[in-house]
Structures are given as C-alpha cells and as structure tokens.
Length: 147
Image (tube, rainbow, N blue to C red; front, top):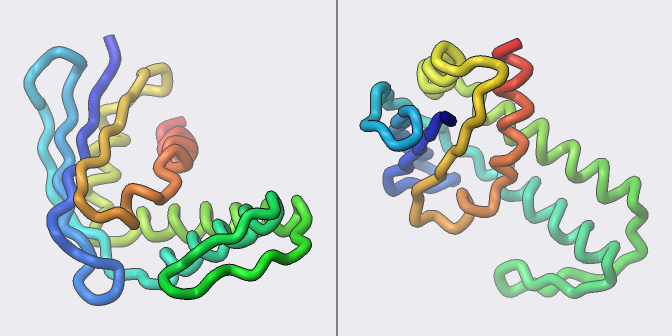
C-alpha cells in the first residue's frame, strides 16, 4: 500500500508574503498520521526562472508565448538552451524547497518514507504559479535524501 502526502498552501504570493504550508501524510485509505506546518519564503526569481524556461522551450518549438502583456519573441533556441533553462529552474525550485522555514516539513517526509515507498503527492492551492512549478522534480530531491 502506498503513501499519500497532501501539501496545502494558504493564500500567499511569491513577491512579498511567501506561503504557509501544511503537510498531511498517511497510508493510502487511512486517516492522516502526520501533520506538520511550515512556510516557503517569497521568491519572485523562481517565477522568473519558470517564465524564462517557458519562453525558451516554446521558442524552441516555434510557439509565441504571452507572459502578462508581453508577447515572447520567437528566437532560434537550441535544445541545449532549453536544457540549461530547465536545469536552472530545477536547481532554483529545489533550493526554494530547502528553505529553513520548510525544513521540518521536508524532514517529516524523509523520516516517514522508505526508499521503496510509492508516494502520491497532492498539491492543494489556488495559486496558479504554484501549480505550474515542476513538483515532479521534488521526488528526485526526496529520493536522494532518503537513500
């Protein structure tokens, strides 16, 4: 039986307030056994990193991207450009998740997960930018911490 983790983000933003976060962890089909709260700090550069990757990726595909009121210019991006932006985004995202205010949430996950556990992580938020982030990359971070 797998584990289910639910990260619930309170109202917040990347510019000024950051986000309060509650983690609930349980075995599938059972009530939550762990509940931990923490916070992630504001980080407007994280969203800039995401947008930079998006413009580069879509530019590589030849698609115009509208970010706010600015229409991204189509350029001749290489796959190396896309990979570099993806690596930058991944590193920035994982650094944000290593924030001291969030460390006890991360530590609770690590303490209660085994290497062979199958984990589903649900992100609950009304913030569209949080939904866009590459949460699947956090699995790599957690796996490296568990081993």
